[in-house]
Length: 366
Ligand SMILES: *Cc1c(COP(=O)(O)O)cnc(C)c1O
Image 1 (spheres, rainbow, N blue to C red):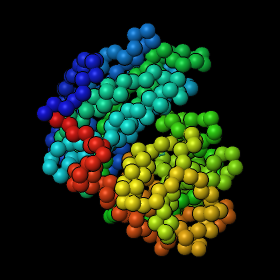
Image 2 (tube, rainbow, N blue to C red; image 1 turned 90 degrees about the vertical axis):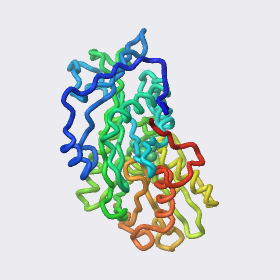
Image 3 (cartoon, rainbow, N blue to C red; image 1 turned 90 degrees about the horizontal axis):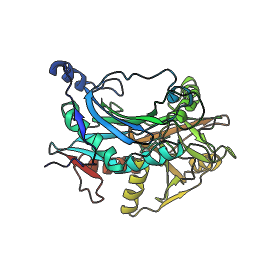
Image 4 (cartoon, helix red, strand yellow; image 1 turned 60 degrees about the vertical axis):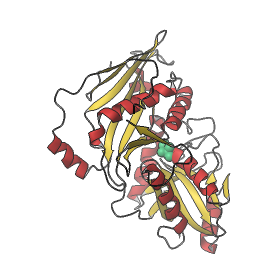
């Protein structure tokens, strides 16, 4: 069954002349880690003003030649996505909601003054790469092939305006279980830095946001925490998200709350999927505002029983402890919460093909 979309651009395929040996590949797949090992191939598609998208190629993964004046190197005109291909229970290969990544990629492109990529072409590029490098998908709980589509401005020009040339690339990296033995609860540091301001690029998935989050993240680590949580830029009061994951709060009465998408929060696809699953469970789910003060107070009174972070890489991560300038507090027992575990299992079961996909989230390849 050929399910690869035909987006109307012809792909040139050239197989790697000296692919990784089966032995080396199986060594990598036995212990893939995250983001350090890569498959043999990559996709590149070029965009030129006046011509649009052209030269779609799947070829050997290799370094890219860039003029030192390429705009991306100076003004950070770059956007990216992150999604996973899973080996399912029945041996099929499946992507989880790639159309949602395609749509978000184009929203990011709009904000960074970059050309949009037809959604079908985005999905086709990913499907073709996964099909060609299918032997690189690790099996087993929590393992997947992590896909990283991204776009860079390649025009050699130092003036400040949108570039007239871009390159869209997809690379793939086998990923193991993010946390070796289940998901331990993490400790998070409330940063004095802000991640995103109203009118800024907080809702776009761009490298620049991450560059700005490295110092806050390093500070959290230096203070003995795992992750950083950012508050809003205007009042430094409302909880927004972690550096790369959205947040959910679970209350004693079963209510689930996640910060509303105000333009300064990245609209996570995991966040959106959990909203749908929680509503199906009959839970009362709200998108709204929640302050750090209220979080502390509710954790102390027992009104708040769980907090978790969510994103493609680690799926769902319980938050056990929160610390900031005004001291620290523990959430629930400080360990993984019950609803957190239940929602994670439900989502993972759908991704793995172990539970019915009633939302049409799964896209099988080949
Ligand atoms: C990618 C990302 C997320 C999570 O999005 P998912 O689609 O669930 O992976 C959350 N916050 C930020 C800042 C991100 O870049």
